[in-house]
Length: 89
Image (cartoon, rainbow, N blue to C red; front, side, top):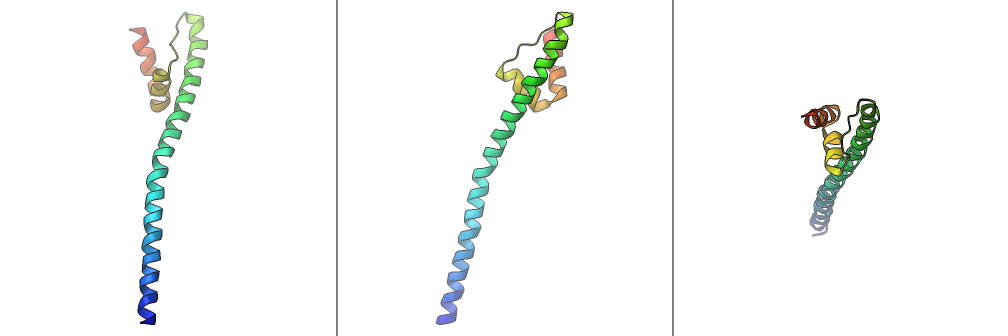
């Protein structure tokens, strides 16, 4: 009875640690995704700011709002090119 009880306790602790790891991972992944979207949105806004500075010499501007910043941040340089094309039409 002594050895069997110890194995059950060890298995219970192991399963508990595995479940704790899974729950922690499930909570951490959305936080990383939100953080990455915010960071990319900030970078997209900065990139659009520089496009507006350079485009100011040619009387060309792109409105910087949260949607355009996220498009530029999420897609990167192709997103900025897409915004330039959409603004030129």
